[in-house]
Amino acid sequence: MKRVFVALILLTLASCTDEIGARKTLERNNYKIINVGGYAWFGGSNNDLYCTKFKAIAPNGDTVTGMVTKGLFKGNTIRLND
Image (cartoon, rainbow, N blue to C red):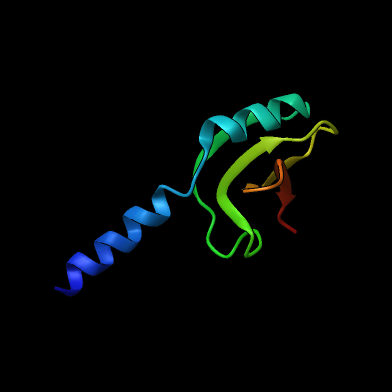
């Protein structure tokens, strides 16, 4: 029974990503995408429905990692890791 519960939680979190929206947001902001996909644990705020992690080359040429978050009443937000 525990395995079923854990599997349901993982499936729910996996569905909380928006790879297409994250790619579009990064491309519109002149990031060169290296990798997009997967749920970003502990990323975003309580109001964000989607939290998609990424690795990309920023407009200034630095390689960065972070997440693109999206909420119900807001657009996509790029959040960079330290």
